[in-house]
Image (cartoon, rainbow, N blue to C red; front, side):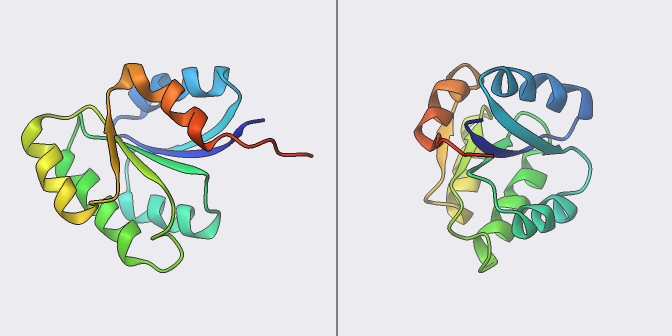
Length: 121
C-alpha cells in the first residue's frame, strides 16, 4: 500500500469515480461528499498522507474545508492539493491555504507519488 488519501468532492458518485485511479495505484482512499466538517474531523482523527480537495463543485465548500484544516493544530501540517477549479476559485483558496498545490485531475495520480511511502502491515 502506498499510503492514505482523504478526498473531498461534493458529489458521492463522482468522488467514488475520482478515488478509483488512486485506489488502482495502491492508495487507500476515504472520501467525504456531504459534510466538510465531518470530513475535517475524520482527517484530524486519522491524518492521511495527503488531502485531495476538488474545486469543480461547490468551491466555497472546498475553501471552507481548507480553512478548517489549516486552522486546526492536528491538521495544519497535512499536505493539501486542490484539483481542477477555475481561476477565481483557485485565487480565493490561495488566500486561505497558500501552501497548497493546485493541479488538474489528469495530474493527480502522478502528483500523489510524492507522498508515497511503503507501509508494512
